[in-house]
Image (cartoon, rainbow, N blue to C red; front, top):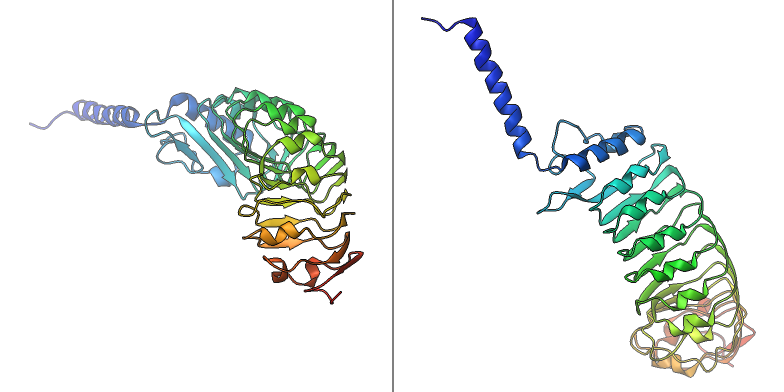
Length: 334
């Protein structure tokens, strides 16, 4: 006796139901996170770069540009790069509470300000929003995200002054605000970061005024203030006991005596002071720097003989030329 058509229909329906329940039961993606990501996709205009964000698939296993925590299965990383879609950073980004890493990079048509909703991301450690078209200020409200370790807002169109409150971030170790249109002075508070091996990159802006003396109390591993309009003394940034590895003060209006400065003998690898108004001579202490790989003091007001020793003769004349009266190898003899 053949089974009836109604019985077969019931069997097929049960098979489909079991399949749906099975898929639902095995999906790792948190429903809230999935809903937020689909909202972000919609707000960005459904760009091709995140076409894998399909509501019928698992965001933890099948979606590109996101990553889930292995244990909690909550979204903890979101990165979108190299695309020409137009839009703003969706405020819904702030509704992914387990995010530790947010990277939006080389999205030239991603414009508008950084949304305040990201202050809800209290686990966020890495905020990388570089090479975009972002506008508005560097937000003071970033200081509310106490978990931040690394902030990169470089290569945007940000304007205004640098908020002093950034120094209140207790875990911050690296801050890159380079290649924007920032104005004003460097905050006095930047000499009071908790981290004593800071990376600070403020180059290619229109910052002006003197460097706060408080920066002499801060230990930097890397400090790049190049291509601004900074003036006055910067000699207090140097010292033989500082952990300084790279310092670039080039193309500013600094004026100080270079002669008696001392440098860390084993840490310093990069020193660029070109195009300033620095006077005095090349310090003898530079011959004690063992691993110097880049050195440029051209276009200053230095005088006297270049000391012999260390790495100083490894650099060609272009590292020294256009000074007041420097002489000795690699320049002509005195």
